[in-house]
Amino acid sequence: MVRPRWQPTAPKQPEPSVNWCAIGVTHIDPDDYPVEVHDGTGNGQDDYAVHEALLVLASFYGPNAMSFCKVMRDGLYIAQNREALTPQGITLTDVGKPVAAPELVNQQWIRRYDVEIRFRRKVERTYPILNILSAPFEIDTDTHA
Image (cartoon, rainbow, N blue to C red; front, side):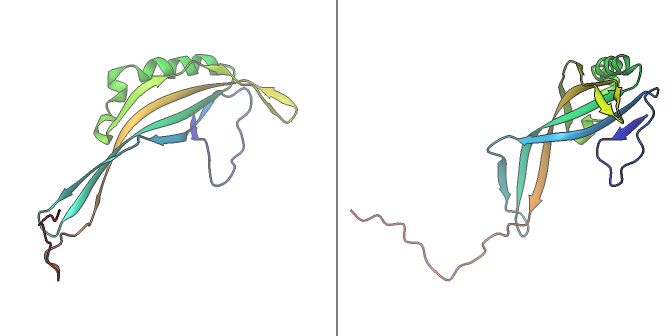
């Protein structure tokens, strides 16, 4: 049972005896100096590309939380399990160590283990930056000393 970490309405949290996971992107860190290349064909456009690091937090709850946390961690390193990410331009960077983070809910401690997962992705966008076809001025390239 895997749920998004943040939901528009707060669903009832499963009982402490239920194993489940909450997962969500907590941080996106783009690299500095993205690539921007002008394509002068047709009307013109700029192709923009930037690499981003994504930090995902997975929190596991329930009596087998640690076990499921380790299974997920190990499973992410199996190539077949990452195949769906490749067409999206996403690669796995690393998976952190499970951290115990018990949570007090209704005066009862709930078992919880958090693990950070780091991915990288390439984001590509196209902007309609039109070509300059003519201008009502002349450029003087003579240099005067």
